[in-house]
Length: 254
Image (tube, rainbow, N blue to C red; front, side, top):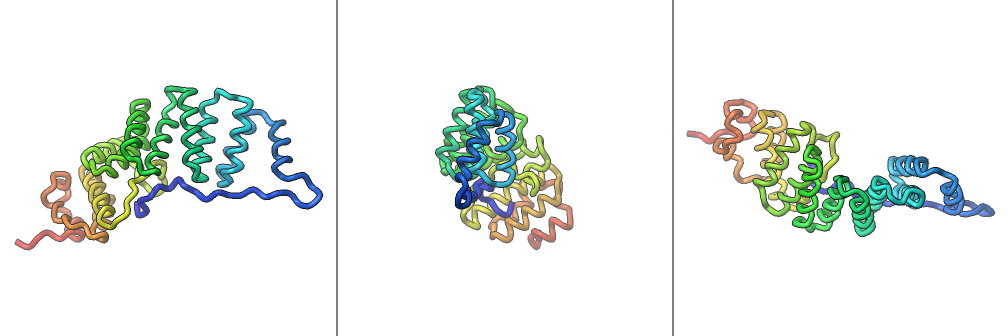
């Protein structure tokens, strides 16, 4: 959670051409792709994405789509690869195509929301994240994303509700190894502090002392002005007698 910006934008990896006397690698690759099945092309695209060669992944997925034009999953995969090479317009185009191919496919709807979030169109992002939640309420990522959109609009109670639901569905929704959602784009220390305190409240209500304390420390480091509210806010009521909490936020002298 230390880094509060979106983690899904990557650097483009460039393809090179073959050496002197050989056909360009792109031409060789096209001939190879023509001989592959749609499933083989999809697998090759997945491998290229895993190796962070997003431009090549796009080419493989597009070649697969030429052989399977109604495959919503493939359209979504092209969109993800476009997103990972920072082409927001291209990404949204393919996500929209995926959603049109399968109106019950929640991933591209969520991903359109991610594009809008990255463009800082938080109201539009929330609309798509809500649609994704309506299609599949059990996906913790969607709730994390919707919470981020609400937070970015300063709708803190709504954000708390979504983050709480995300943790109910996946206790590691904010874990270092999860990283499946997007977090609120926070620019200032004051906003980071507010965000950390909000998460501390959620963890406190769940009785998760360690994560609560970690968030409180971050809020303190970023200068949160109302840390004393841990002795007032109802969410912290179960933890107030804990000495570790008192070490992070000493109670006021009476």
